[in-house]
Amino acid sequence: MSLLHVSEEGWIVSHLQYLDEIYRKVRYENGFCALGFNKMIFEINSQYLRQNQIAQTIQESQDNTITHKKKRKRLQLLPQKDLEKVNHVKQAFGAMMTVARSKGLFSRNNFFDNNEVARLASMRFYQDTYSLKDENLYGSNDTDDAIVSEAHNKKYVFPRKCTFYSYDVRDIEKKIELSNQYDFILLDPPWWNKSIRRKKMKCAEASYKMMYNEELVKIPIKKLLHSNGIVAVWCTNSSNHLNSIINEIFPSWGIIYRAKWYWLKVTQAGDTICNFNSAPGKQPYELLVLGTALEKGKIDIPGGKLMISVPSAVHSHKPPLTEIIKDYLPDEPKCLEIFARYLLPGWTSWGLEILKFQHLSLYEILDECKKDEGDISNVSSENETRNNR
Image (cartoon, rainbow, N blue to C red; front, side):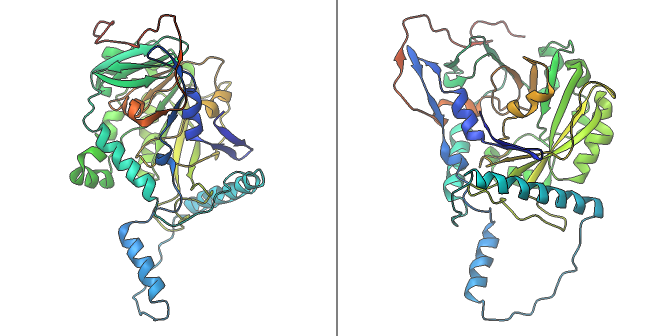
């Protein structure tokens, strides 16, 4: 189980533990072995600081006896409704962490290295996967075991019962069956923003293709979602993006807005990766916006829930929702993720970066392969056993 703690306020999730669990038994070469994901990517030991913040912190510690006269900026506070939202998240976070610490969770101490190990692991990830071309690839692992197989002459690990499409989202109507079959659809859109645009100019491999809202509304969610289905969209703290989801994107998909949940990012010691901010600026959380196809139905989705986890150092490597969302879905639900960046067991996944986190270089073999004399079949892909769709 990736759920470390469950309460009325929300859930504490271990992304790393989830990855290790789904690859505890993997068919590889002529036997089975366990694979462990690269732990360094989750070595978040302290709050993140930019280089200018590090220099300022050092300077302030050296000059703490010197009084500097600075022109004070006028304090700009968030609107009242946003301040109430921040206060709710802070209070719920405090209540959850009090219980979590009493259970022995987050017992590590913070130490200031500005997450150097995780930063280096993230840079290595981008360097190792930049040349991987995942596009125009379709396949599935129809077996009950995770397996290691090849795609485009590279080795990847595929979770059990997964299906994947590595195509541009604009081609989704051409490639996937539109028969209202999915009980849950999750999207992590590549929102257009200045930060990613600047990163794209400096370092192409650390960026992704961004999309305008006008393109997102064209995704045929209504044709893909079951009549009792749920849609969830990852959203930044941009009020513009949030308003677009609720007032523009959801209505165009035929979705009724239901609730907002908050993904709280914490260090290994359980402290937020940045401070809560009462002024416009960065917060230690992102939003998950949920909606349903029916205005009135059997699904009751509570608002204001927290999902707490140590984040990956790699951009947009979101925590798994499988165990969190299952209480709101039927048994053995059909789930689809669009703009997916890694594969999930039992899910259908769509995205141009679909296999990057599946690359075998990100995993280590934890035990020797136990030989299996039976037949070991490879994952099927359009380049091998399937016809192009």
